Image (tube, rainbow, N blue to C red; front, side, top):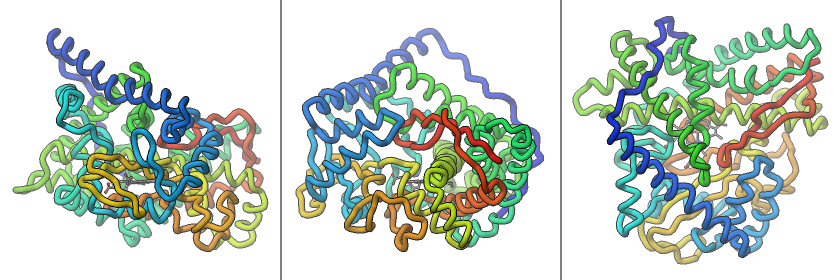
Length: 460
Ligand code: HEM
């Protein structure tokens, strides 16, 4: 594995191919339909259901607020109603064993799907833009199942094994130290620093860019694509938000095509160069498979870890006694990262669709039903975690959380994220032991991805 930055020049800036007037008009109608079926209609139904007391509806409505505190009373109501709750639209579970049962079951397909039959399903199929890459668009790993899933996943797994990631630890430390040197200069001026762009985002994007061979000149652009596309996981976007997300995904695709083409001519020892080489072999990846796999690994590589670092920084500020424990015993940092992931997970929930009639926690679930697995709720299951609402870096079973999901789709980057969290948070607090969050921070507006958009801190 290469952890060296590629010195190759950046590919040209993205340009979109011209489309005829008619194509643009049809494209506009399809976009309206996608918004209506994917956001407008479900959002309206959820809001209506929430008003009538439906718990799934209330979860969706409360997740629209970037402040998670409103979610907890609803999550606890779901918990009180039993291991799996049937709402008007879907099942929802916050029980850790049941979340694991669903995520590891062969009776479920990853993702949430409208049935292809029926007028709405047909309309959805017509409005699809199959070329658009996105985390929830097939053939993204996140929404395909075996045998395709096994094939794609095998191609990228090797790079993210615990052993391979340990080899990256030293390089991650160097990157963190360099970023902290820059911060130190700014800290000397005594002004608060927004720790999100300057550290929490910069660290994981630099690491994943080096692993994947993205040239330094392109990193800010990739970061901007990722931030603009992050709401693509959310339900209930406004039409304008959805258009912005789609435009960002299209620009990302254009950049990725040019970048992969560039790597074809200038092979390095990075993961993307190897994926390109595999594509060129007989029976290798198709262009769509290559783009989806490369795009997901690149974006997932920093869009979540930025939240782990910002949530961890905020939590440690709120709990000075936990920080003191880490100062006394630095071997606790690894466990502290798992406790941050358990307590304030960067991914709120995921979903599965039943492929056939089945049972979950003894309850009948019919084919086509959706089960929402609320990872944040499962992480505070009192049957598994003592005093689940307490943030405790010494918690013995902190690692039993499902912040990285479970089963076939278990996060491919979990070892990398844990290592980056440990190195990143420890280096920050070692360098600035008096770090203090100052008022004015804002949470990200995204609903599934939870973290801080801005987090001003005084470093010393
Ligand atoms: C704290 C950081 C992270 C969190 C909380 C996180 C969380 C998750 C979750 C919950 C899933 C599964 C979703 C589902 O089951 O539907 C997932 C899948 C995935 N993650 Fe992560 N992730 C993190 C970091 C990373 C990193 C650094 C990478 C980079 C390699 C990465 C790459 C992926 C990929 C490629 C998948 C799809 C796996 C599959 O479907 O087989 N993630 N992640």
